[in-house]
Length: 335
Ligand code: TRP
Image 1: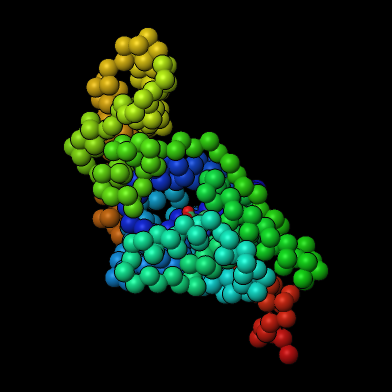
Image 2 (image 1 turned 60 degrees about the horizontal axis):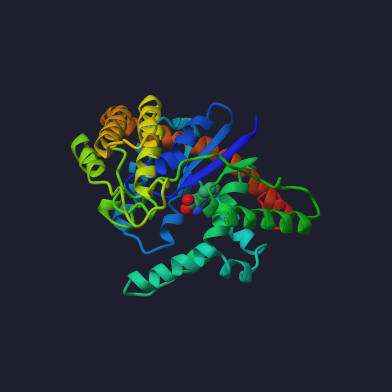
């Protein structure tokens, strides 16, 4: 069976954008592949963050992932597998400094730091972020990485590191992982459909997967529909976003019939909003129920995830032992 690896940073809440854009796909991939899904807390330290919140955010995200259907046995917490950091150090020595400074995400994020934080502190960790990500991927020898466009460059770097490593040790040790492209809907902010849904833009700009019915209705009701000049026959970004949400949350019938209305030029936005809100509430109610049940047994679930991380760690340890052997580092069994 081919294997898949993907990871997500523990930055608090999960919203409809994360869910439809990535996590829903994770749940589906579990049927066809051996999956490794990580909550990457080492990565979360690369931007200014709160030490008091990190551990809680990590558990919160684990519970959220379980509540939407990710299986416990496929989940790990990155810092419970310190071999990720060890492999990352070794990879640092197989990665060019220049290439790291040219990464788009590094440029964007360091700019974000200088614009938003008083300290203007840009850590080496932020520069090194993609090397740790390469270790996440290669440590399990994953065949596929489901990625969005924004992560393509990181996968490219991973392949470069693997190649340079293989050349240096004169062995085809690492298999070059492939991207797994899936057509996931890109959900926009309902308050400003020109932007993608994200937490960093502020409360109005995302809808949490676990938020209560009333506030979901309110946010969908106030969704921006018509903005700017549209050419005849062109759908506005806001209306398109509502249609996307309706379809993604499983409202195919309503989607088809409202689309007919739209094409006949008699779509009422209230109807589209009502259908979308209903469908989202339907879908998220199940997740909320699951979450309540999980939170009642937090202790057991934490234990399960520590166990699964321990199991997954064995593979990571195996890789790191082989890598150390190949690059000339010490192992207790060596003289
Ligand atoms: N950089 C990814 C993101 O911001 C998170 C991530 C870390 C990741 N390690 C990974 C994604 C390995 C895929 C594979 O979304």
